[in-house]
Image (cartoon, rainbow, N blue to C red; front, side, top):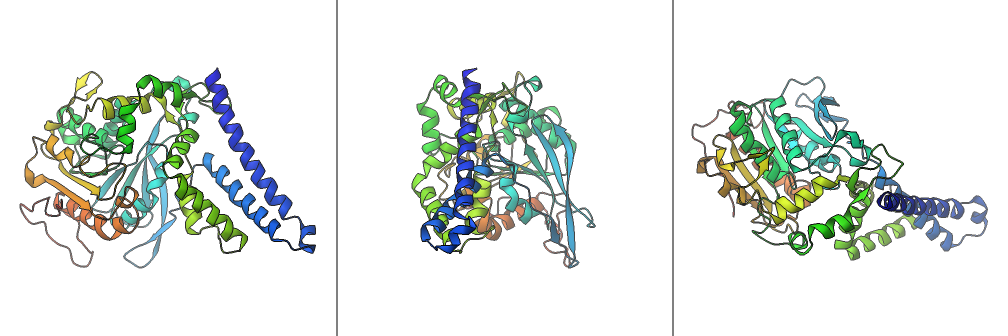
Length: 435
């Protein structure tokens, strides 16, 4: 019960800070104060506005905000988000472009379950929609999942991915971003053994910790320093009485957010002080860069405790994927069983979370795959976020990923619709390699 009390205490503190911000904004905006103009009231109102918004968005799942795209016909096509499979811990969703014929490229975008919602990949989805049929793994907030639904660890996550791939069929290209990269690799290998016809045509792994020891970072060092007992004692709590998942053990989103913020405390502090200044001077807006970034960054979700602990113990400490010793449902998965799926890795030269070397290790594990089906790419100036969003993704990485998809499609999609191109026999998948 003390863990439930702790969970509720964190929610109480969050709610209190939101209330303090709203109160400060209301008091400083009271009409009578306009009779005696004073900059102190402007700053108080600005502090209240920023504070209220900051603590309010911590418990709200952001909307995808992708309402339409412009088609090649010059018309705007509405986007309808449809569930393909609905499961207790996560859904498979499809971004259906209304009034457009099905695209040749079918992409499953595997979103991380690492504290943020799948909407963190909003810009990635938006950039792929004009050229692909896009499917996304939409993981649920563990606080809203009743205890009766049971556990969810790295093995269950892998089985979910296998089920999603089976549902979408073999004419599929999978892109895994960050945390799910090792488990997506394992799911593909397991499919190669159990159901070869269900394997995707290509697998792109972006900034994932396939071998965390290949290039140590602060994240991997932390995983090495602490014991599993310390993690369970300090990070795991039970969901409070307010939510459907009351009693479920989780790694709380608010605790994760505190860890995220502490890694770059000075930068975040400066960002909020600057935003208060902009609000006080009337230079801020609802969708300015600060709000666009922090609306997503501060929206956190609880992670199932068993998933978090098994990730640290088996992926980071035990290196089960890196050593090709991963076991799912009692079966040892052999990554060397992948013989037909083209595999590409993408890394950021300035990635301080999954540093260069961690992800490309996947290619050495694919012992059954010919070199013509392996590819690697390093974006020199990109950090962790930049390799799947922002300018580096849009201008450099995305075109290479689409070319890789086309090179490994049965009927490659044309680069532009007015000039279809034919696949070249024996075209090497790793022509974009850079290291």
